[in-house]
Length: 281
Image (cartoon, rainbow, N blue to C red; front, side, top):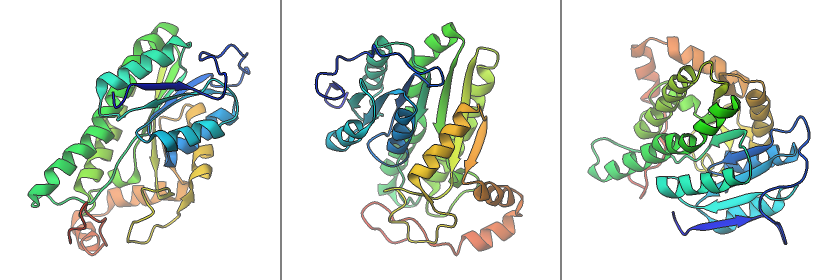
């Protein structure tokens, strides 16, 4: 684990919640990538519904600010890098000690421009896949057995419309998000009949720190808290796959049927995400 830091919420908070949970509350929700962006917004949305939230993130002060602003009590924070599988599993065990977990949301993700012919970008490819794909597996892994035993629970993977087609200069990110969709679909079918649901959310352009420095136009850009409210509705409805906002679903469908030659001609002119270190593309 990054620093072994587990913390409960608020002055005098005892840890596991003893307060009654409203009948329509999702109960206990574990969220990675919760220090900012989509993860933080989902934490706010679920806490507003009465859930006790376990927040995972790398940045202690940012994570503490999110936790301290949540309504309710007994939220817990875990300061760690999701690529640390042992640390993530220890956090999961700690949160499970407080009671059954109803929702697990793998929201942690990173993005950067990458080029295959730039040797220095190999480490960036690896970091993106480790964070966006393998850490999702490690996030779900410790919760499945208890969900199976209870025959209920929802696992949520955060994908992206960027996984529909390969984007030039963003091979690592596009490929990682395509992998998320295929992985979540595989897991959904594996768990069919177990009572455990798997939901894949594919955000379009959402106003977060990750998108703040994109050098290209972002159609249908959505405020992150509006996204979170719609995402919670999709999760609680048990949607298998949902693109948010809905106009991007039509964009995604169109992209899938555009002939490769036409797609290549158009996409090759697209502005590209900056690489780490500011290398030109």
